Structure formats: structure tokens, C-alpha cells
Amino acid sequence: MVWADGQEDVDNINSANAFASCSDCVTVAISFQVVLVVGQADVVIPQNIAQAVNWDCFRCITAALASFMLMQPAFGALSDRIGRRACMICFGLFGIFATVPLLGAIGAASTPMAAFALVAIALTGVSFYSAISGIVKAEMFPVQIRGLAVGMPYAISNSLFGGTAEYVALWFKNRGIEPSFYWYVTVVAAIGFLATLMMPDNRVHGFLRDDTGEVVR
Image (cartoon, rainbow, N blue to C red):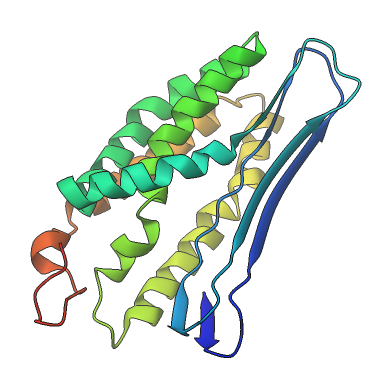
């Protein structure tokens, strides 16, 4: 989040870099950035960069999935039509039913193109959430408490689940039950799905309103 006073430029830079030297491999760099500007800014030029490089590589594919960003406007427009809650439900269902087969298939992929296609499918499902992650939270709370109500749960959940994901995965791997991590992710997705079912419809109960006081749909 950027606090702007009109005198400073909003020029955040986010980059992802991947390098590899291998045979029959895929190097993937994914870069995703959401910049929330609070206040007035005259110059807004954030940069989002994804760079993937292979060297001394035979029969390999280098894929920079900056195209993941191109999905976001489309899924954002979809949410304007069917509602943010519906998109979150789709994301939850995707997480429940696709996590185990997708992660298993990615691990067993024997060709670069197969791995790339599976990752692209996964990112498409994730786009149901990533395209609206900021707005769906903002619509749930009135402006008086929006910063705290959005920021605190986000920080806690990212610390508990995102921050520990690597350790949990390695714990399963060290015990020879690595596929169990896929089910761990599925359970987390199921919890998120149940929470989504209890969400109000933003098109009726949202807290983002226009100048006339009507809910922004």
C-alpha cells in the first residue's frame, strides 16, 4: 500500500527472476503486483517484471509467465458481471478439486510443454481470486475501519499459511509422504470455500458506494 501526498511518484518495482542451466526443462518466472494508492498521486508508474533465462540448455523451453497478468483484467471484468462472491466460490471449488490432481500431474510431467500447460491451468484457476483480491476485501468493510479490517486478517493469514507453506511441505517430504501436502492445501482451500459461502453479496451489501450512496456493483 502506498500513501501518496501528491508530491511523490508511485513508482513501485516488483520483479521475479529465474535462471537455469539444464536439459529438457522449463524456467518459469511469475511476477504479480497490486499497488493500492491512498491519497492523490500525479504520477503512477508501477513496474511489474518477470524474467526467465536458460543458458547452456538443450531442448528446453523458457517461459516468462508475465502473461499471467493479462488474465487479470478479464477475470476482473467477469467479476463485475457475476459478482465477486461468485468468483471466490469458483476459486474455492478449483482449489478443492484441482489441487491434488494438478500438483500430482506437475510433479509427474515428462515434457516441458506438459509442465507449462499444467502451470497455466493452475494460474488460470488462481486468477478467480488474484484478479479481485484487493477489491473483494475493500467491499466488505466501511471506510472507517477498512485499513485495519483488510490489513490485519491479510497479514495473519499470510503469516500462518503462506509463511509456513515451505516448512510444512518439507515436513511432509522428509517423512516420505510428500503428496500429503497436496491434501493439506486442499483442506485450506476448503476452509476458504466455506468462509466464502458466508460472505455477503457485494452487489447488495457492499461498502463501496458512489456519490449518490448507491452500492457500486
